[in-house]
Image 1 (cartoon, rainbow, N blue to C red):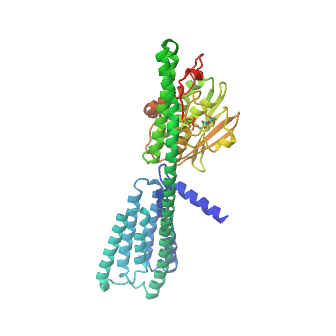
Image 2: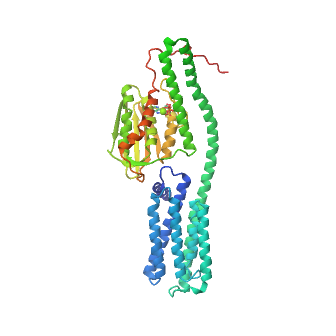
Image 3: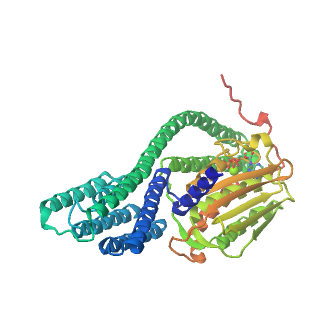
Length: 483
Ligand code: ATP
Ligand code: MG
């Protein structure tokens, strides 16, 4: 019960601080900074209000408490909105806290009567560790040391206010020291442990990547060989019997070149995601009308195949951040699958819904196609996985869904599938709803991204079989002897 409650809170905080394109390590750094600020806020709040009610004569500490509360509350509220300048913002925040603390220590009469604020100040230096910048931590430490030397030098020339009695000084010193030690232990140690965990995961990922690359190489050679063999065979047939093979041969060559090009583009996209060079470019606009526009562009292909393609948004407008280019990739891959695997007379529904409570936007693509058998469904997002190799009739290489999954995850979303053989398939894409990016109106999108959509539809058209009465028999193709 308590475990699921804390997991729930953790998920909520991650949701608050996460943003599309934010990696695990950065998220854990943002979380450590935000949670330590929250902890600091609770500590300062309890002490300040205790002083206010029970020892109101401690005016210096009450004033210091309220200043810290102001700084901590603003940091908590502002952090979720800071993405790129998160480090800069927290550095300034820690610097301000240190500055206010230095002034208070001087007002309290120096290090000995600082009620433990000198320890609190050092914990600000420690708390900069999750920012993962050696130069920031060292700079803060140097500032702290200079202050220590300066106050030590000023020594007895500073006057101690009468409210700071030795007893009060010792009690508050103890409270501050214990609390700040706990703060450093909990957040900094936890952050370092998490980092080590991520590093281990990263090492395992590298190992898996190496194995995957070897597997990929084997797959690629296979995927390239088939269309190349067809292109070569067709060229020979056109050369020998041009009257009979010119039309169909040219079409097949173009078809297979298009398959190769699509394969290369998909592989390049996957490589870009893996090397981290595929960036997220968010724009804020109405995602529903953009999806409506994308679906509409596929209607001609659906119409040719006598498939009913309908767009059914639950709400007519959802203004949120999304990457239009990546959305073209996601929707065109899912629609291209639905169109490929749905027979004539079938239907495809593109539905959208908004979960306000969880801040999630869902795109649901349902078809009445051939469906995916249960023993294959867990593998459809694997690279090069195809339920059955229907190459030549519907085309494809089995990279489409793998790429969609990687893109959706890059956008901090998730994708799932439900299917019933012979009945149909539904893909669900959940995207987080944020509203921080630059606002752009819908018309501009259409101008900017119409080229990508046309390219996706063009490659889709080439995946359909040639409407020829003449079938190619194995005898028509050249023989390949594999030893
Ligand atoms: P590519 O997308 O690279 O051109 P592909 O469409 O075969 O090739 P994926 O999009 O990754 O590859 O899909 C993998 C497999 O999942 C498909 O080959 C197909 O067997 C199955 N599949 C995907 N979508 C559907 C669907 N809507 N209905 C039935 N089967 C599907
Ligand atoms: Mg596909």
